[in-house]
Image (cartoon, rainbow, N blue to C red):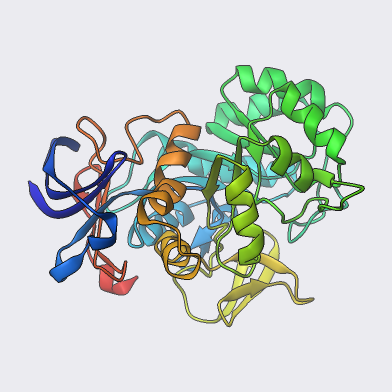
Length: 374
């Protein structure tokens, strides 16, 4: 199959075509063109499929439901250009987390038709600070290596969020890293020094930077200060509700591997109303998702809107914005054949118009149907 358009590659924008064969990109051909001209004259803009490492739900379903919820979630996000995702848990009793992981295990091994590839699990709880729950339910506990190993055997944990100041957590970071799990610092009341110690122990990044962590003060830099001063990677939610545009700009200047996530809930891709988030009921209204007390509770963001926010609201160059929603996260997960349009990479392609609205989506060469229902 050949797709013509303005192709956003790691080296720049090419005006030409992609050839897809057997689920992979067989060839990329074209002549360089200024990125500012991408999409001119009605030409399609071809982007790599988006990678979202923080997905709690979508399409009215929540990851913690287990059962067939993940199928609905992966289909819904594929319609918005997400071709690879990490199914993300909530803080809950261990038995509930195990039940959710049992539903996720088979889906991680085999992609369902018309769906994003579930690349593994982001275990966001329960190993977080009871004092920085955010919208997480109150079931936080300290981690043990044996327990994480047992959970990892049910479904592959690619990312694990912990509060490093909790007893015993620093000592776990090295063994978890060695097991191939990326440890992220998040939902933490820890100090700047706690953050630095965790990074020195092998922590890979930060979970939804700025949110649910100790903030930056010039005499107490906090966890945010550790991230800005020393972090190589961090998630950020660019819905423009979780983080002020000025703070996003500061993070972009400080953290080379900053990448975007949705932290999406069941409300993503759905009308205003009540939805489930773990054991909570949340309300979607005016573009945000909140608990009854007004606390932000994940988001209704999709990755195509994240890209538009970066380009249209924050004025990021298109190539940089694409790196933040696709390439950087793929590299962070150790996936050199995703998140980029290059020969040999998976045929994960998002076709957009000049306004960055999704026109077509391909996941591993399969075209996603019914985008109008997204």
